[in-house]
Image (cartoon, rainbow, N blue to C red; front, top):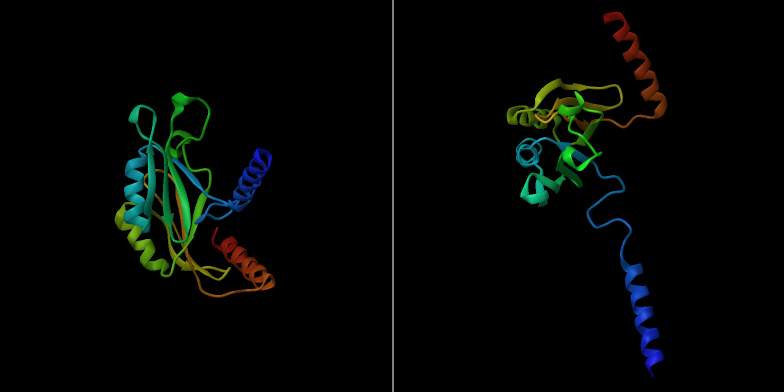
Length: 178
């Protein structure tokens, strides 16, 4: 009797493990993590500038800084944390590195309104909204913590050949102005 009960428990545990999805609910395959100086301020900025919703935050060692926080921006989750250089090798804020090492791209319903909102909240305008050769209306801002954000509204769906032709024309025009 004991052996049958143990076998049932083992089978039940195995079944429960299989029921756990490999990607948690609400996440996508890739999740960005931003390292900043002043994560608490960054969370508030992202709420004002990008309409982010804070999902959770964990304080750092000894209650100092933020070790891990999660924001929902649109349908995606973004992690935010303070840099902790005293903990050894790890991610560093753009201010430490002298600039961002990449950028994040957000699709929004109205790029012009999103751009204005971000700038009014304190982002630095890098490129005002403009219609681009790949079919998006696109703009760029840098947040007060050094991260670059591309904001876009998709306006037309193009084939690869159409995009290539428009890109060649764009490069040709840039060469005339450079």
